[in-house]
Amino acid sequence: MTSVPGTSSPARRARDAGVTFVLVHGSCSSSLMWAPVQRELALLGHRSYAVDLPGHGFDAQYPAAYQAPQDLDAWAAEPSTLAGVTLQDNVDAVADVVRRLAALGPVVLVGASLGGTTVTGVGNTVPELVDRLVYVSAWSCVRRPSPVAYMQEPEFAENLLAPLAALNVGDPAELGVGRANYRTADPDLLAALKAATMADGTDAQFLAFLNLLQPDESLAVMTADARGDAATWGTIARSYVRLTEDRSLPVAMQDRLIAEADALTPDNPYDVHTLETSHTGFLLQPDRLAGILDRLPV
Image (cartoon, rainbow, N blue to C red; front, top):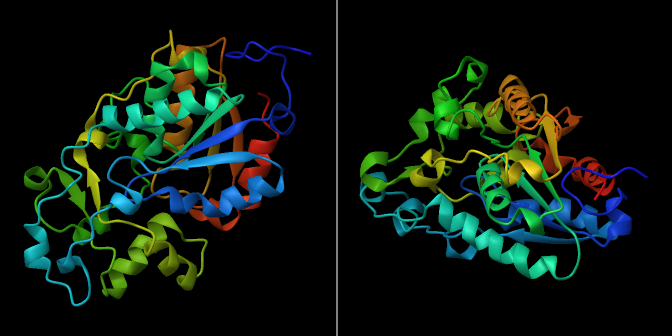
């Protein structure tokens, strides 16, 4: 059997390795988004641990002004508990989880969307404790420092996020967060948000997903330097799951991120997989993602 870059043991299927999958959510989300994938992983005999990043999950902030009836003026001035959360805070929280789980066996660290920045940071911090990194249409920064920096590049042009600026509430510079009104009743805004994030779901599925989201996300996380270090992160075996119908992080940008990482560590390239789903549509077909994870060499 051949060795896999970034591991000290022969390649073997994740099912045989007693692996734990550590799942990191994206922006304005929480561990709850991973429930469908965790169910499928359990059916395949796997342990998994879905992280709530600092200020997310049951620590999320849902001010009274965000509820119904909404008071958008009051909410626009409401200080955010996420304003002081940094990317390093996220990395520290997940690295602590990885340290504890690594004592039980191999760890595969999986990030979706903005969660990729945290996954990369953990790879930079404790590469010896991570057996594989998996990016699910996630930001894997190499040449540009942050997701916001990459959003100015031509490969991002096919995203459908521009109309969603109308969802924003308050001044991000003053609040220290992006604040989106996911409880809007505007049918045009809801249609635009569905097109950008879950075009392959039904309207009912999309609304159910919106009710899992929290409105704020830290600007410090989105703008921090999140580049992978070839000497640490670059030594870990890694996989990328491309989502071809993604109109939040377009597949052209996903392919650029893969190519830049492979150029940085040509002896340890991405193992690439493809699903024909939207940015969050993989949650509607969780067996397909779980099947990819199950077959990964660890």
